[in-house]
Image (cartoon, rainbow, N blue to C red; front, side):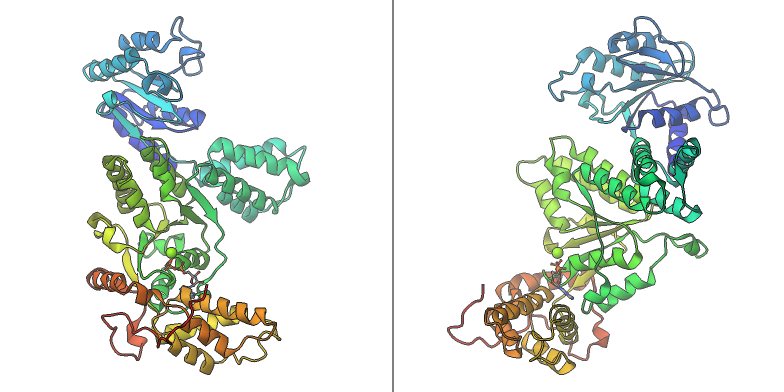
Length: 543
Ligand SMILES: Nc1ncnc2c1ncn2[C@@H]1O[C@H](COP(=O)(O)OP(=O)(O)O)[C@@H](O)[C@H]1O
Ligand SMILES: [Mg+2]
């Protein structure tokens, strides 16, 4: 359980007498409750400790008690703390403006220096003393990097959010109508996961007052609040996963892999001692359904889909990308079970390495992400896609990170049939537009033949461009429109034959084919891209 994880980690660190800790969170009240629950508990610590809180408005005060005189300046408070003689935990809230230059503030060198001295001195004191920095933004200054240990503070879990909702409902039962049953209640609680406790409180308050009370329809309101809260981070987006795998032609082995693992994160799977799957890396030829499949997983598994914009992780101010990736991880774990979609991960990597950026930061950020992937126990399924496999660093491909690396190649003949079927059936629905076409296997097979070497995206484009031609002449769509549309475009497999060959060679030894070639009656996969379609001389290229 998330809350337990924090308590256990803090217990260990306090027991081991770590002098200086740092917690990054917006939830000051909740973290303070958690710290007190550990520090004051004689079952957890051999020597329980009193908790003192400092803030610039009140000065230093025992938790729940009156402030100590003349401790409002950070320097004065630290001075006091330095000479402390009894077991204690000091929580300093929002000290960060004194620690690092940010938003026009200048750091206070005395405060930084004092903290360093404290960190050294606390280790040798006869009584256990620790200082915890708590703030929403935690850039630890370089001087303190080696002294301060950052602990992650997870978002509230199901139980904590449930307790909040129950207490709010109990408090307002008299004046608002509450018409939810146990199941609705659980769904609302689940919908609020990913929010901080104050955010959840706001969302519940709105749900209680709007529409004359709390009813099942408030689920939507909570979900909308969460979408907004997640988007506010600027890096994550909750996207609808309305497309299912029936919109994907081929890729049978990938589909089977995913189908088999449906529900492996649920309590029902616990009896089998299965770990929740970590994630997949989909590599391959552009336009063949990688991004599409990422959306379909969430649809198939009925899980929320979180899209990560890696560019934004690195796009912020210098020094903040590490904080950004921690925020992403915390949010995803808060919403878990969920699918975390990282599209074109290699671009994020490239953006991180180049452009005058600090390569060390990029490596650390990806290191954080990768070790999280390796160790995570929360069911966050990472769906990463990559077109340019050559630029992926080897540590990405090491065992233990992704469960599997799939290679998505140009569609085989049977796959092209399926893709034509999907896109024609989807677009040609009007009786007049379809009146000159028989959408049957013979047509799909013929079109599949004509489009050898074309990607799914190119087939879809051909359908669209055929429709444009037919529309321009106000007549039904004809087979010839489609054939012409195919012939008048040069597929990527021709213009980028070398690149595709390189991806295939790379994948040969490192990835599993997403297409089940054993079902495919065709000869073994050609080593070079299929030949270009017969090119009529002087053809026009459609735009
Ligand atoms: N196997 C496929 N089946 C059906 N449509 C496909 C397939 N592959 C690609 N497409 C079409 O092409 C579009 C772009 O494909 P996409 O998944 O973005 O490719 P990429 O592999 O580059 O991520 C999809 O949205 C879909 O409409
Ligand atoms: Mg894509």
